[in-house]
Each structure stands twice: as structure tokens, then as C-alpha cells.
Image (cartoon, rainbow, N blue to C red):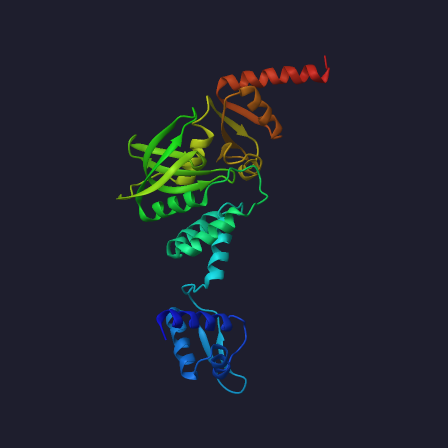
Length: 319
């Protein structure tokens, strides 16, 4: 029996044990077309890998798969590998907190060891599948996997990135972590040419390729906080700070993380930090929150609020 044949038989044995019942050695031997001795050897192989195969003595006993104290390495046949990879690709763009990142890490591990023929089938299934989701920006799963590996392995990445002016520029970075706001994906990385930390939108990347250049990870800001600060402040003409008479979590429920960030405060107040190009429009959004507020900065926002108040007063028809 070849190694490949033994591995296939062990997979079949695992599949039988996962049905949740006890199997006698004779029953397993008949299902697998082998001897009782081969069954015992394959059971030991599963135990060595970490699968808790219990032997139950007496009438009605046999082998049963139990719960273990650690997660053993997964043994997947072709169909299971394809189904798992497709599910992970879909989950990596999901909206469940933390699930997308965990799915992406698992997808990177699975994609690394998956044979090319199965990888091609996964791409075909993914390419023929559409999902009904919100107004988020779809990211190529291959880009996600490439960047996830580069973050894990600490290797530099090269890509072309379109700035806000639409012009594409070549970038070489040392990636740290990807962050998703639910609508968009961002990469926090050290920009080698600019010698500073930068945030890059994945949907603006082209020709993403990992290099063979390894780097020593350097101390870095908290990726989530850094990306949120970048996307809520850096792109805008104005950065407003507004005291809000409400619990921070209540304001966070109403203000998406890609729009503004909420700083904890005292005595039932918190501080909303939000970027804007149009202060008149920002004043409307702040009023719509429905809480008592106080503008800390900029002064121009107070002027915009006063203009809004005059317009509302005129609209109400009061003297």
C-alpha cells in the first residue's frame, strides 16, 4: 500500500468515526476493505495526529471519536477542502466582528498547502458565486491571501496604489496588519520609500506581489486605532472635535468607524472626532445624533451650526 493510499484510507476512517457512533473493528475493516490489524494501525495514526479515538470495551463497544483537549490537524478530502476554502473566502468579507480576520488567516494557511488543481476549482466556484451584501467594496481574495501571508511571514510587498488624485504610484512596504471597517479593507504598513507608517486601501491596489525580502518587525502603533485615525481625519480639510452628552458606546452605534471615532470622556460625556470637507453638512449630521453637543473645534463649525439654526428657524415659520 502506497503512502497516498494509506492517507486516503485514514481519511475514510476518520469520516466513519465522525458519524458519531461506535464502530467495532470488524465493521470498520469491512467498510474499508482491510484487516482488523490495518484498522488498529490506522486508529493509532489518528491518535498520533491528536484525534481522540476512544476504545470502548464490552458488548456494543468499539471505536468512537471523542472530544479532545487540543485541536488536531485537519485531514480534508478534496471536496471538503474546496468547500472549506470557498466558505472561508466568503467569510473573509463578512460582517461578523472578528470572523473576517480569522477566516482570512485560516484561508492563507489552507491556500498555502492546497494542490494547484484544487486551488483552480476554488477560484472557479468563487468566480461563479455572487453574494447579496451591503455597499462595501469587493476585494480580490488573492490580494487578501497575498497580504495575509506577507504580514505573517514579515516579507516586503510591492504594489501600485492609486492616490486620492487617481494617479498610481509604485509602493514598497513592510506590512503589519489588515483592518476592515465592514465596507472597506485597509493595510497598515511601513512605507519604505517615505520612511513612515501609511494606510493603503486594498481596492486601490494593483499588481500586488510579495517579495523575498524579509524584514525585522518594528514597534508600531495599534493598527486598528491608526487606520481609524487615518480614514476619519487625514483625507479631510477639517477635523472636528465635538463633546457629546451620551455614553461612548451609544455614539459608536450611530457613527460608523470609517466616519468618526469616539473618545471616552467623563460625567456622561464623550468626544466625537470626525473629518469633513463640508461643515454645513457635518452640522446636520451632528444634530441628527439627537444628543446635547458642544463644539470644541474648529470655530468654523460653530458658524456652520449658527447658519443651520437660522435656516431651521426660518423653516419653522416662527417669529
